[in-house]
Amino acid sequence: MRKLRTVGRILVIAAGCLAVVAVLFHFVYRPWQLNWGATDEEIKRAMAGDEIVPDPTFNATRAVTVNAPAERIWPWIVQMGYRRAGFYSWDILDNDGIPSAERILPEYQNPKVGDLVPLTAKVKILVAVAEPNRRLLLVTQSPTPWTWSWGLYPIDAHRTRLVSRLRVRLRRLPSRLWIDAFEIVMMRKCLLGIKRRAERRDDGARKTPPEGEPPPIGGSSRRDEGAGHPLRGGEMRGLHPVKEVSMFDLLLRRSTLVAALAACPALAQTSDFGLLVGAHAPASTSVRPLRVATTLRASVTLAYGHRLAGFRAGDLLLEVPLAVSARASETVSREVSAGVGATVFLTPGVRLLLAPASPVRPYAVLGAGVGSFDGSEVSVMRDVEVRLHRSTSPAVGLGGGLDIRLARLLSLRGEIRDFVSRAGLGGAPGRHHVVFGVGAGVHFR
Image (cartoon, rainbow, N blue to C red; front, side, top):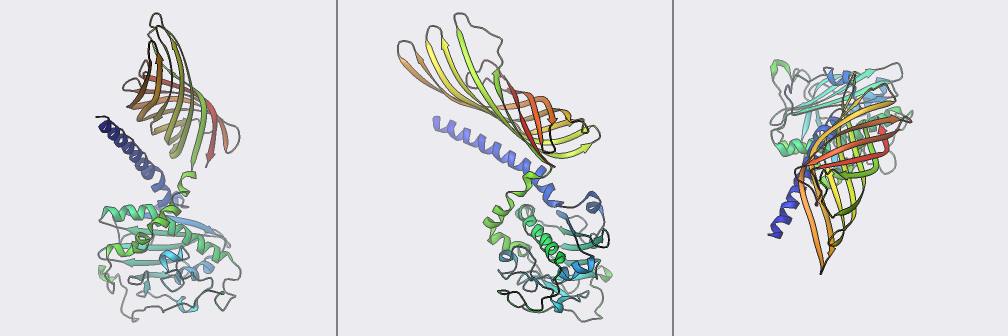
């Protein structure tokens, strides 16, 4: 029976962890990676090829500002390809470990509609639109239709917004999860690689590859001129068959490395972290005769918040709070007892932060999750008895506080939360667990 209870607790904790991961992935990581660097206007702007995949399962628009005119960026884009110039990303994953080119390759500077560009050793994609210094569209079709569109939008004579949009329609859930989780690792480095190369002043000065870089292998695969536009008549002609897994085979084979690279960047985007120290007071309305009890509970609350939306009255944030309190108690009545224990509450939810223009911002929180207690108690009457207490219960967390901005990245924070459990945890006299806290908040915006 004890083993069954232990297994049950493990399953409850595992389910709670999975729920937290799923919430963070859907509301924090996925929005960040789908629109990395892009403005709202760029996300909504129509780009070449949007109509080819009208209902994508993956629609990612990423952008970066390059301190160079469009004519210096364009050569780096059009020469990309497997065992051509590479993809300026993690070469071990997408170019068989061959370093991406650090110079402009003249043989790839004149793409024509209908050219085939190698994506992997077996997959080639079609050039559907090629307007120098403006836009480039690469497409493929069955059985996995997708488009890769590039746009160059001048800001002034010396700066350009480089925008990339990838639209894919995948049928299988594992493929959707893989591209959602790891594609940003490659694309982010690709955009930054183009930016670094285009901003150099010697991009066309070197006529020989740098030491250690092999010469480019292969040439451009070009269809005969005069064959017509590949999209004319609504058809996609001259396309090579593509297996659904082919786009991501290199990622799948090296998933451990990619996962490690993807694990860190999302948490510090439009987010804040709070650390508060205070007291945990289980609420009670009953007093037993002939019983004098002293209970000391210190608490620490960690809270991660990610901004979901902003409006005139305030901001709405996804919040994941973790409250931990330690108990040391002594009881004197007909018997003498002493105990220690720890109570933990994890209640993911939302935080409503009001008065966006004020340095003093009130906020309210609401969440639901789980509470648990683990402790032991020693009692002495005629014999010495040791009792272990372990309990887990669903819990709801609600409360509010004040966030006082002291500097651009730092604030003073004070709050009160009431964690309501289905039953008293660890012998607590009631279902309400009130946590007071004062501490600091760090903001990344």
